[in-house]
Image 1 (cartoon, rainbow, N blue to C red):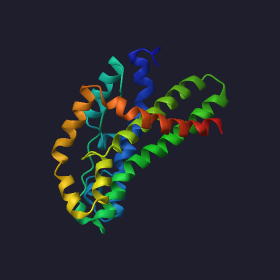
Image 2: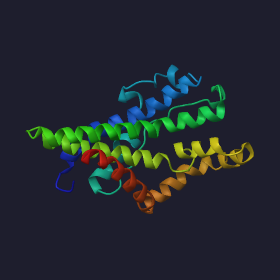
Image 3: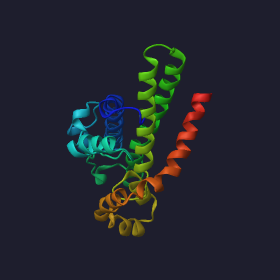
Length: 214
């Protein structure tokens, strides 16, 4: 969307970004409660209110900088606190709590695809704004899904890998967590994150756009 200026980009991306991060984090909190940990629920994180999930730097400032300079849209929300020891089945619960966020993003991407189809058939003054917002919603949710499924702690993909490993290996793997965000930031600032994720993003986008042509 190079033809849009910064204000137009913000207008197009604001709602998709808020929905993407809010439902992602609310899904984590809801599934944690389902598996027996009420920590996030007691903090009000099973909520569709964006204010309960927004991180000033990760949700607002960093995405704005990405939009301003172009390139890979990157950001995060306040992580949902989960006490895995409270889960009825620690390993299975950890797996599903972690998977809930990316699955929520995939569901939202499908919804934005359907809204894009609606924009195409409406053919009125609302069609172009809805189509642009839908494209933004599809892209944001696919990127968040693929990014969070990286097998790197503390990302969701890392939690899923940890839950699948034998206990001894899982413990050794979990000790890498303090370095995970530093590795991720290094990938961002060295511009290697986008080449790593792009093939997987392309695969998911191609699958989603089959819905448009259906």
